[in-house]
Image 1 (tube, rainbow over the protein chains, first blue to last red):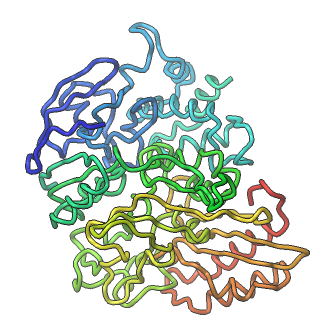
Image 2: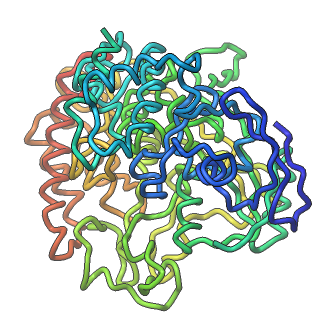
Image 3: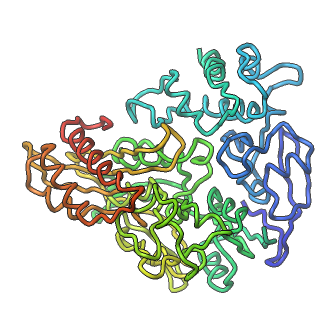
Length: 178
Length: 340
Protein backbone atom coordinates (compact mmCIF):
# COMPACT_ATOMS: atom_id res chain seq x y z
CA UNK A 1 0.00 0.00 0.00
CA UNK A 2 2.19 2.81 -1.21
CA UNK A 3 0.03 5.84 -0.96
CA UNK A 4 2.44 8.40 0.38
CA UNK A 5 2.35 11.54 -1.71
CA UNK A 6 4.02 13.86 0.76
CA UNK A 7 7.51 15.09 1.19
CA UNK A 8 8.87 14.69 4.68
CA UNK A 9 8.03 18.18 5.81
CA UNK A 10 4.53 18.55 4.46
CA UNK A 11 1.92 18.45 7.18
CA UNK A 12 -1.02 17.78 4.91
CA UNK A 13 -1.66 15.37 2.05
CA UNK A 14 -3.85 14.98 -0.96
CA UNK A 15 -5.58 11.70 -0.46
CA UNK A 16 -8.43 9.55 -1.66
CA UNK A 17 -10.82 7.94 0.78
CA UNK A 18 -13.20 5.22 -0.37
CA UNK A 19 -16.35 5.64 1.69
CA UNK A 20 -19.55 3.67 1.19
CA UNK A 21 -18.49 2.69 -2.30
CA UNK A 22 -17.52 6.15 -3.53
CA UNK A 23 -14.01 7.56 -3.91
CA UNK A 24 -13.61 11.00 -2.38
CA UNK A 25 -10.58 13.18 -3.01
CA UNK A 26 -9.54 15.41 -0.12
CA UNK A 27 -6.65 17.54 1.03
CA UNK A 28 -6.29 16.93 4.74
CA UNK A 29 -4.01 18.03 7.53
CA UNK A 30 -2.30 14.88 8.80
CA UNK A 31 -3.83 15.48 12.22
CA UNK A 32 -7.29 14.77 10.81
CA UNK A 33 -8.75 11.54 12.09
CA UNK A 34 -10.97 9.42 9.90
CA UNK A 35 -13.82 10.44 12.21
CA UNK A 36 -13.26 14.14 11.56
CA UNK A 37 -12.75 13.53 7.84
CA UNK A 38 -16.12 11.78 7.67
CA UNK A 39 -18.01 14.32 9.74
CA UNK A 40 -16.34 17.62 8.92
CA UNK A 41 -15.11 17.10 5.37
CA UNK A 42 -17.49 14.57 3.83
CA UNK A 43 -20.72 15.54 5.60
CA UNK A 44 -21.27 12.03 6.90
CA UNK A 45 -22.42 12.91 10.40
CA UNK A 46 -23.94 9.52 11.18
CA UNK A 47 -20.67 8.46 12.74
CA UNK A 48 -20.52 10.06 16.18
CA UNK A 49 -17.76 11.60 18.26
CA UNK A 50 -18.15 10.56 21.88
CA UNK A 51 -14.95 10.43 23.90
CA UNK A 52 -12.55 10.95 20.97
CA UNK A 53 -10.07 8.69 22.82
CA UNK A 54 -11.04 5.17 21.77
CA UNK A 55 -12.95 4.46 24.94
CA UNK A 56 -16.63 4.65 23.98
CA UNK A 57 -17.04 3.14 20.50
CA UNK A 58 -19.46 5.79 19.23
CA UNK A 59 -17.14 6.42 16.28
CA UNK A 60 -17.05 2.78 15.16
CA UNK A 61 -16.94 2.29 11.38
CA UNK A 62 -15.83 -0.60 9.19
CA UNK A 63 -12.49 -0.59 7.36
CA UNK A 64 -12.43 -3.43 4.85
CA UNK A 65 -15.23 -4.96 6.87
CA UNK A 66 -13.38 -4.80 10.18
CA UNK A 67 -14.67 -2.60 12.97
CA UNK A 68 -12.32 0.17 14.06
CA UNK A 69 -12.45 3.29 16.21
CA UNK A 70 -12.36 6.08 13.61
CA UNK A 71 -11.31 8.60 16.27
CA UNK A 72 -7.91 6.91 16.62
CA UNK A 73 -7.38 6.21 12.93
CA UNK A 74 -5.62 9.02 11.09
CA UNK A 75 -7.35 9.65 7.78
CA UNK A 76 -4.03 9.60 5.95
CA UNK A 77 -3.62 5.97 7.03
CA UNK A 78 -7.11 4.99 5.89
CA UNK A 79 -6.31 5.35 2.20
CA UNK A 80 -6.70 2.11 0.35
CA UNK A 81 -9.32 0.80 2.77
CA UNK A 82 -12.98 0.45 1.91
CA UNK A 83 -14.71 2.43 4.64
CA UNK A 84 -18.32 1.68 5.53
CA UNK A 85 -20.27 4.00 7.82
CA UNK A 86 -23.78 3.73 9.19
CA UNK A 87 -24.96 5.63 6.07
CA UNK A 88 -23.66 2.86 3.84
CA UNK A 89 -24.42 -0.21 5.92
CA UNK A 90 -27.76 -1.08 4.31
CA UNK A 91 -27.43 -2.69 0.92
CA UNK A 92 -29.93 -0.40 -0.79
CA UNK A 93 -31.25 3.08 -0.18
CA UNK A 94 -34.67 2.35 1.28
CA UNK A 95 -34.04 -0.89 3.10
CA UNK A 96 -32.67 -1.05 6.60
CA UNK A 97 -29.81 -3.35 7.50
CA UNK A 98 -31.22 -6.22 9.61
CA UNK A 99 -29.48 -4.80 12.67
CA UNK A 100 -31.00 -1.36 12.04
CA UNK A 101 -34.44 -2.94 11.77
CA UNK A 102 -33.87 -4.95 14.94
CA UNK A 103 -32.74 -1.87 16.86
CA UNK A 104 -35.95 -0.10 15.80
CA UNK A 105 -38.10 -3.10 16.62
CA UNK A 106 -36.51 -3.59 20.06
CA UNK A 107 -36.30 0.14 20.86
CA UNK A 108 -32.60 -0.48 21.49
CA UNK A 109 -31.73 3.13 22.23
CA UNK A 110 -32.75 6.16 24.17
CA UNK A 111 -30.86 9.24 22.99
CA UNK A 112 -29.45 7.37 19.99
CA UNK A 113 -25.99 8.91 20.08
CA UNK A 114 -24.15 5.60 20.47
CA UNK A 115 -26.46 3.75 18.06
CA UNK A 116 -24.52 4.10 14.77
CA UNK A 117 -21.41 2.82 16.51
CA UNK A 118 -23.33 0.03 18.19
CA UNK A 119 -24.81 -1.12 14.88
CA UNK A 120 -21.56 -0.93 12.89
CA UNK A 121 -19.78 -2.74 15.70
CA UNK A 122 -22.45 -5.44 15.88
CA UNK A 123 -22.38 -5.95 12.11
CA UNK A 124 -18.65 -6.68 12.16
CA UNK A 125 -18.91 -8.66 15.38
CA UNK A 126 -21.34 -11.09 13.71
CA UNK A 127 -18.74 -11.63 11.01
CA UNK A 128 -15.98 -12.26 13.56
CA UNK A 129 -18.13 -14.85 15.31
CA UNK A 130 -19.03 -16.47 11.99
CA UNK A 131 -15.32 -16.74 11.24
CA UNK A 132 -14.90 -18.65 14.50
CA UNK A 133 -12.99 -16.00 16.42
CA UNK A 134 -13.12 -16.79 20.13
CA UNK A 135 -13.70 -14.14 22.80
CA UNK A 136 -12.79 -13.78 26.46
CA UNK A 137 -16.23 -15.21 27.24
CA UNK A 138 -15.77 -18.36 25.15
CA UNK A 139 -15.65 -21.66 27.05
CA UNK A 140 -13.13 -22.99 24.54
CA UNK A 141 -10.59 -21.25 22.35
CA UNK A 142 -10.91 -23.85 19.62
CA UNK A 143 -14.58 -24.87 19.71
CA UNK A 144 -17.46 -23.45 17.71
CA UNK A 145 -18.77 -20.02 18.65
CA UNK A 146 -22.32 -19.79 19.97
CA UNK A 147 -23.46 -16.20 20.26
CA UNK A 148 -25.38 -16.28 23.53
CA UNK A 149 -25.98 -13.26 25.76
CA UNK A 150 -22.65 -13.56 27.58
CA UNK A 151 -20.72 -13.77 24.31
CA UNK A 152 -22.50 -10.75 22.84
CA UNK A 153 -21.97 -8.67 25.98
CA UNK A 154 -18.25 -9.44 25.91
CA UNK A 155 -17.86 -8.87 22.17
CA UNK A 156 -19.79 -5.59 22.32
CA UNK A 157 -17.95 -4.24 25.36
CA UNK A 158 -16.15 -1.65 23.22
CA UNK A 159 -19.44 0.21 22.73
CA UNK A 160 -20.73 2.14 25.70
CA UNK A 161 -24.30 3.39 26.07
CA UNK A 162 -24.69 6.05 28.72
CA UNK A 163 -28.46 5.80 28.56
CA UNK A 164 -28.08 2.18 29.59
CA UNK A 165 -30.06 0.66 26.72
CA UNK A 166 -27.94 -2.47 26.91
CA UNK A 167 -30.84 -4.82 27.62
CA UNK A 168 -32.57 -3.93 24.37
CA UNK A 169 -29.32 -3.67 22.38
CA UNK A 170 -28.60 -7.24 23.44
CA UNK A 171 -32.12 -8.31 22.49
CA UNK A 172 -31.83 -6.67 19.07
CA UNK A 173 -28.54 -8.39 18.30
CA UNK A 174 -29.89 -11.72 19.54
CA UNK A 175 -32.84 -11.27 17.17
CA UNK A 176 -30.47 -10.97 14.23
CA UNK A 177 -28.39 -13.93 15.41
CA UNK A 178 -31.40 -16.24 15.53
CA UNK B 1 -1.72 18.68 18.48
CA UNK B 2 1.45 19.75 16.70
CA UNK B 3 1.42 19.45 12.90
CA UNK B 4 3.47 16.53 11.62
CA UNK B 5 4.76 14.96 8.45
CA UNK B 6 3.70 11.50 7.39
CA UNK B 7 5.58 8.86 5.45
CA UNK B 8 4.51 5.31 4.68
CA UNK B 9 7.82 3.51 4.96
CA UNK B 10 8.54 1.17 2.05
CA UNK B 11 10.73 -1.24 4.03
CA UNK B 12 12.21 -1.74 7.53
CA UNK B 13 15.65 -0.37 6.65
CA UNK B 14 14.33 2.97 5.41
CA UNK B 15 11.93 3.21 8.36
CA UNK B 16 14.85 2.70 10.73
CA UNK B 17 16.92 5.29 8.86
CA UNK B 18 14.15 7.89 8.97
CA UNK B 19 13.56 7.57 12.71
CA UNK B 20 17.26 7.27 13.54
CA UNK B 21 18.11 10.48 11.70
CA UNK B 22 15.24 12.64 12.86
CA UNK B 23 14.78 13.22 16.61
CA UNK B 24 11.11 14.14 16.24
CA UNK B 25 10.18 11.12 14.14
CA UNK B 26 8.40 8.08 15.57
CA UNK B 27 7.05 4.83 14.18
CA UNK B 28 3.29 4.58 13.72
CA UNK B 29 1.69 1.16 14.14
CA UNK B 30 -2.02 0.79 14.81
CA UNK B 31 -2.00 4.18 16.52
CA UNK B 32 -4.40 3.17 19.28
CA UNK B 33 -2.07 4.48 21.97
CA UNK B 34 0.16 6.92 20.05
CA UNK B 35 -2.67 8.92 18.44
CA UNK B 36 -4.36 9.17 21.82
CA UNK B 37 -1.13 10.39 23.45
CA UNK B 38 -0.79 12.98 20.67
CA UNK B 39 -4.31 14.23 21.39
CA UNK B 40 -3.41 14.44 25.06
CA UNK B 41 -0.22 16.37 24.30
CA UNK B 42 1.91 13.66 25.90
CA UNK B 43 3.52 12.78 22.57
CA UNK B 44 4.34 15.49 20.03
CA UNK B 45 6.22 13.94 17.12
CA UNK B 46 6.92 16.07 14.02
CA UNK B 47 6.99 13.04 11.74
CA UNK B 48 5.08 9.77 11.71
CA UNK B 49 6.76 6.89 9.92
CA UNK B 50 3.94 4.45 9.18
CA UNK B 51 5.28 0.90 9.35
CA UNK B 52 1.99 -0.98 9.06
CA UNK B 53 2.12 -1.34 5.30
CA UNK B 54 5.43 -3.17 5.21
CA UNK B 55 5.97 -4.91 8.54
CA UNK B 56 5.52 -8.68 8.41
CA UNK B 57 1.87 -9.41 9.14
CA UNK B 58 1.89 -13.20 9.02
CA UNK B 59 2.14 -15.87 11.68
CA UNK B 60 4.21 -18.84 10.63
CA UNK B 61 6.18 -21.71 11.99
CA UNK B 62 9.90 -21.38 11.79
CA UNK B 63 11.71 -24.13 9.99
CA UNK B 64 13.75 -26.40 12.24
CA UNK B 65 17.45 -26.92 11.71
CA UNK B 66 16.76 -30.26 10.04
CA UNK B 67 14.59 -28.48 7.51
CA UNK B 68 11.32 -29.94 8.81
CA UNK B 69 8.44 -27.57 9.30
CA UNK B 70 6.43 -28.16 12.47
CA UNK B 71 7.31 -28.41 16.11
CA UNK B 72 9.41 -25.33 15.77
CA UNK B 73 8.73 -21.91 17.20
CA UNK B 74 6.08 -19.52 15.98
CA UNK B 75 7.20 -16.35 14.24
CA UNK B 76 4.68 -13.56 14.66
CA UNK B 77 5.15 -10.55 12.40
CA UNK B 78 5.20 -7.25 14.30
CA UNK B 79 2.49 -5.95 11.97
CA UNK B 80 0.03 -8.69 12.92
CA UNK B 81 -3.09 -7.14 14.42
CA UNK B 82 -4.06 -8.27 17.90
CA UNK B 83 -7.36 -9.72 16.70
CA UNK B 84 -5.65 -11.82 14.04
CA UNK B 85 -3.15 -13.09 16.61
CA UNK B 86 -5.91 -14.21 18.98
CA UNK B 87 -7.86 -15.78 16.11
CA UNK B 88 -4.92 -17.70 14.67
CA UNK B 89 -5.56 -21.46 14.81
CA UNK B 90 -1.98 -22.31 15.81
CA UNK B 91 -1.95 -19.72 18.59
CA UNK B 92 -5.31 -20.89 19.92
CA UNK B 93 -4.36 -24.55 19.87
CA UNK B 94 -0.78 -24.39 21.09
CA UNK B 95 -0.43 -21.14 23.05
CA UNK B 96 -3.75 -20.63 24.87
CA UNK B 97 -2.04 -18.24 27.29
CA UNK B 98 -1.25 -15.90 24.41
CA UNK B 99 -4.70 -16.01 22.81
CA UNK B 100 -6.37 -15.49 26.19
CA UNK B 101 -4.09 -12.58 27.08
CA UNK B 102 -4.85 -10.79 23.81
CA UNK B 103 -8.58 -11.40 24.16
CA UNK B 104 -8.47 -10.03 27.72
CA UNK B 105 -7.25 -6.67 26.47
CA UNK B 106 -9.02 -3.66 24.97
CA UNK B 107 -12.10 -4.04 22.74
CA UNK B 108 -12.91 -5.74 19.45
CA UNK B 109 -12.35 -2.48 17.60
CA UNK B 110 -8.99 -1.72 19.22
CA UNK B 111 -7.74 -5.28 18.76
CA UNK B 112 -8.49 -4.94 15.04
CA UNK B 113 -6.23 -1.89 14.88
CA UNK B 114 -3.43 -2.59 17.36
CA UNK B 115 -0.26 -4.30 16.17
CA UNK B 116 1.96 -6.76 18.03
CA UNK B 117 4.96 -4.44 17.87
CA UNK B 118 2.96 -1.45 19.03
CA UNK B 119 1.39 -3.42 21.83
CA UNK B 120 4.80 -4.14 23.32
CA UNK B 121 5.81 -0.48 23.20
CA UNK B 122 2.56 1.11 24.41
CA UNK B 123 2.91 3.51 27.31
CA UNK B 124 1.61 3.29 30.85
CA UNK B 125 -1.93 4.43 31.57
CA UNK B 126 -0.83 6.02 34.87
CA UNK B 127 -3.10 9.06 35.23
CA UNK B 128 -0.20 11.41 35.97
CA UNK B 129 1.71 10.32 32.88
CA UNK B 130 -1.31 11.03 30.70
CA UNK B 131 -2.08 14.44 32.25
CA UNK B 132 0.33 17.12 31.04
CA UNK B 133 -0.79 19.50 33.78
CA UNK B 134 0.77 17.18 36.39
CA UNK B 135 4.40 16.40 37.19
CA UNK B 136 5.64 12.99 35.99
CA UNK B 137 9.22 11.73 36.00
CA UNK B 138 8.50 9.47 33.06
CA UNK B 139 7.11 12.26 30.89
CA UNK B 140 9.30 15.11 32.17
CA UNK B 141 12.39 13.68 33.91
CA UNK B 142 13.01 15.29 37.26
CA UNK B 143 9.55 16.89 37.55
CA UNK B 144 8.47 14.57 40.36
CA UNK B 145 5.90 11.84 40.92
CA UNK B 146 2.58 12.68 42.56
CA UNK B 147 1.45 9.04 42.51
CA UNK B 148 3.06 7.82 45.71
CA UNK B 149 1.12 10.36 47.76
CA UNK B 150 -1.78 10.50 45.33
CA UNK B 151 -3.74 8.13 43.10
CA UNK B 152 -1.86 4.84 43.02
CA UNK B 153 -4.47 2.16 43.55
CA UNK B 154 -3.66 0.59 40.21
CA UNK B 155 0.09 1.14 40.20
CA UNK B 156 3.05 -1.13 40.89
CA UNK B 157 3.74 -3.29 43.91
CA UNK B 158 6.86 -4.85 42.42
CA UNK B 159 9.85 -3.24 40.71
CA UNK B 160 8.88 0.38 41.29
CA UNK B 161 11.27 3.08 42.43
CA UNK B 162 10.91 6.34 44.37
CA UNK B 163 10.82 8.01 40.95
CA UNK B 164 8.07 5.94 39.34
CA UNK B 165 5.53 3.26 40.20
CA UNK B 166 3.75 3.15 36.83
CA UNK B 167 2.64 -0.25 35.50
CA UNK B 168 3.08 -1.65 32.03
CA UNK B 169 -0.41 -1.93 30.57
CA UNK B 170 -0.05 -4.78 28.07
CA UNK B 171 -1.72 -8.15 28.56
CA UNK B 172 -0.02 -9.71 25.54
CA UNK B 173 3.42 -8.88 26.90
CA UNK B 174 2.70 -10.77 30.12
CA UNK B 175 1.99 -13.92 28.13
CA UNK B 176 5.07 -13.39 25.96
CA UNK B 177 7.20 -13.00 29.11
CA UNK B 178 5.98 -16.37 30.39
CA UNK B 179 6.58 -17.93 26.98
CA UNK B 180 10.25 -16.84 26.82
CA UNK B 181 9.60 -15.00 23.57
CA UNK B 182 12.38 -13.44 21.53
CA UNK B 183 11.95 -9.99 20.00
CA UNK B 184 13.43 -9.47 16.54
CA UNK B 185 14.61 -5.92 15.96
CA UNK B 186 15.91 -4.05 12.94
CA UNK B 187 18.30 -1.30 13.98
CA UNK B 188 20.75 1.14 12.48
CA UNK B 189 23.46 -1.54 12.77
CA UNK B 190 21.28 -4.27 11.27
CA UNK B 191 19.00 -6.94 12.68
CA UNK B 192 19.33 -8.50 16.13
CA UNK B 193 17.32 -10.67 18.52
CA UNK B 194 16.52 -9.65 22.10
CA UNK B 195 15.29 -12.14 24.71
CA UNK B 196 12.00 -10.90 26.12
CA UNK B 197 13.55 -10.73 29.59
CA UNK B 198 15.98 -8.12 28.27
CA UNK B 199 13.52 -5.90 26.40
CA UNK B 200 12.21 -3.79 29.28
CA UNK B 201 14.03 -1.78 31.95
CA UNK B 202 13.00 -1.15 35.53
CA UNK B 203 12.48 2.58 36.18
CA UNK B 204 15.22 3.21 38.75
CA UNK B 205 16.08 6.89 38.45
CA UNK B 206 15.39 6.97 34.70
CA UNK B 207 11.70 6.07 34.33
CA UNK B 208 11.63 7.77 30.93
CA UNK B 209 13.78 4.93 29.58
CA UNK B 210 11.41 1.98 29.40
CA UNK B 211 13.17 -0.43 27.09
CA UNK B 212 16.66 -1.39 25.98
CA UNK B 213 15.83 -0.33 22.42
CA UNK B 214 17.81 2.50 20.84
CA UNK B 215 16.28 5.34 18.81
CA UNK B 216 15.34 3.96 15.44
CA UNK B 217 15.12 0.33 16.57
CA UNK B 218 12.09 -1.26 14.94
CA UNK B 219 10.49 -4.46 16.24
CA UNK B 220 9.88 -6.62 13.17
CA UNK B 221 8.73 -9.91 14.70
CA UNK B 222 8.22 -11.82 17.92
CA UNK B 223 9.28 -15.44 18.10
CA UNK B 224 7.63 -17.80 20.55
CA UNK B 225 9.38 -21.11 21.27
CA UNK B 226 7.21 -24.22 21.13
CA UNK B 227 5.64 -25.37 24.37
CA UNK B 228 6.05 -29.04 25.22
CA UNK B 229 3.07 -31.29 24.56
CA UNK B 230 2.46 -31.73 28.29
CA UNK B 231 2.51 -28.03 29.10
CA UNK B 232 -0.77 -26.34 30.01
CA UNK B 233 -0.91 -22.58 29.76
CA UNK B 234 -3.44 -19.92 30.61
CA UNK B 235 -3.94 -16.22 31.34
CA UNK B 236 -6.16 -14.85 34.06
CA UNK B 237 -6.89 -11.16 34.48
CA UNK B 238 -8.71 -9.38 37.27
CA UNK B 239 -10.13 -5.94 36.53
CA UNK B 240 -12.62 -3.47 37.91
CA UNK B 241 -15.28 -4.32 35.32
CA UNK B 242 -15.87 -7.58 33.51
CA UNK B 243 -14.60 -6.43 30.12
CA UNK B 244 -12.77 -3.62 28.34
CA UNK B 245 -10.67 -2.42 31.26
CA UNK B 246 -7.00 -2.44 32.13
CA UNK B 247 -5.96 -5.08 34.60
CA UNK B 248 -5.73 -4.65 38.34
CA UNK B 249 -3.62 -7.79 38.37
CA UNK B 250 -3.08 -10.63 35.93
CA UNK B 251 -1.14 -13.86 35.73
CA UNK B 252 0.20 -15.77 32.73
CA UNK B 253 1.41 -19.27 33.42
CA UNK B 254 2.69 -22.35 31.63
CA UNK B 255 2.80 -25.45 33.78
CA UNK B 256 4.38 -28.84 33.14
CA UNK B 257 3.23 -31.43 35.68
CA UNK B 258 4.03 -35.14 35.65
CA UNK B 259 2.77 -37.60 38.28
CA UNK B 260 1.63 -34.77 40.48
CA UNK B 261 5.04 -33.10 40.51
CA UNK B 262 5.91 -29.77 38.87
CA UNK B 263 8.58 -30.33 36.23
CA UNK B 264 8.59 -26.72 35.16
CA UNK B 265 6.48 -23.66 35.93
CA UNK B 266 6.70 -20.40 34.06
CA UNK B 267 4.82 -17.53 35.63
CA UNK B 268 4.54 -13.86 34.70
CA UNK B 269 2.55 -11.16 36.48
CA UNK B 270 0.80 -8.24 34.81
CA UNK B 271 -0.46 -4.83 35.98
CA UNK B 272 1.64 -5.02 39.15
CA UNK B 273 5.05 -3.84 37.93
CA UNK B 274 6.67 -1.39 35.49
CA UNK B 275 7.26 -4.32 33.15
CA UNK B 276 5.74 -7.74 32.53
CA UNK B 277 7.04 -9.35 35.72
CA UNK B 278 8.56 -12.78 35.37
CA UNK B 279 8.09 -14.53 38.73
CA UNK B 280 11.36 -16.45 38.81
CA UNK B 281 11.44 -16.85 42.58
CA UNK B 282 8.06 -18.53 42.46
CA UNK B 283 9.20 -20.74 39.60
CA UNK B 284 12.28 -21.84 41.55
CA UNK B 285 10.19 -22.72 44.59
CA UNK B 286 7.90 -24.90 42.48
CA UNK B 287 10.47 -26.86 40.50
CA UNK B 288 10.29 -30.50 41.57
CA UNK B 289 7.60 -29.82 44.17
CA UNK B 290 4.09 -31.30 44.44
CA UNK B 291 1.53 -29.57 42.21
CA UNK B 292 -0.70 -28.64 45.13
CA UNK B 293 -2.43 -25.45 46.22
CA UNK B 294 -0.17 -25.38 49.27
CA UNK B 295 2.98 -25.25 47.15
CA UNK B 296 1.45 -22.80 44.69
CA UNK B 297 0.78 -20.50 47.65
CA UNK B 298 4.32 -20.90 48.95
CA UNK B 299 5.64 -20.02 45.51
CA UNK B 300 3.46 -16.91 45.31
CA UNK B 301 4.53 -15.85 48.77
CA UNK B 302 8.19 -16.23 47.85
CA UNK B 303 7.70 -13.94 44.86
CA UNK B 304 5.61 -11.41 46.74
CA UNK B 305 8.10 -11.16 49.61
CA UNK B 306 9.75 -8.48 47.47
CA UNK B 307 6.51 -6.50 47.07
CA UNK B 308 6.59 -2.88 48.22
CA UNK B 309 2.95 -1.82 47.97
CA UNK B 310 1.62 1.64 48.63
CA UNK B 311 -1.32 2.26 50.97
CA UNK B 312 -4.02 2.02 48.32
CA UNK B 313 -2.67 -0.96 46.38
CA UNK B 314 -1.61 -3.27 49.21
CA UNK B 315 -4.66 -5.39 48.30
CA UNK B 316 -2.86 -6.42 45.12
CA UNK B 317 -0.45 -8.59 47.12
CA UNK B 318 -3.26 -10.82 48.32
CA UNK B 319 -5.00 -10.61 44.97
CA UNK B 320 -1.94 -11.81 43.04
CA UNK B 321 -1.39 -14.63 45.52
CA UNK B 322 -4.97 -15.79 45.12
CA UNK B 323 -4.90 -15.64 41.31
CA UNK B 324 -1.64 -17.61 41.20
CA UNK B 325 -2.97 -20.33 43.49
CA UNK B 326 -6.29 -20.58 41.71
CA UNK B 327 -5.01 -20.67 38.17
CA UNK B 328 -2.06 -22.97 38.81
CA UNK B 329 -4.43 -25.33 40.61
CA UNK B 330 -6.75 -25.23 37.61
CA UNK B 331 -3.87 -25.81 35.20
CA UNK B 332 -2.56 -28.74 37.26
CA UNK B 333 -5.95 -30.37 36.96
CA UNK B 334 -6.71 -29.27 33.43
CA UNK B 335 -6.83 -31.39 30.34
CA UNK B 336 -5.06 -30.18 27.21
CA UNK B 337 -7.10 -27.62 25.30
CA UNK B 338 -9.13 -26.54 28.32
CA UNK B 339 -9.10 -22.95 29.43
CA UNK B 340 -8.34 -22.26 33.05
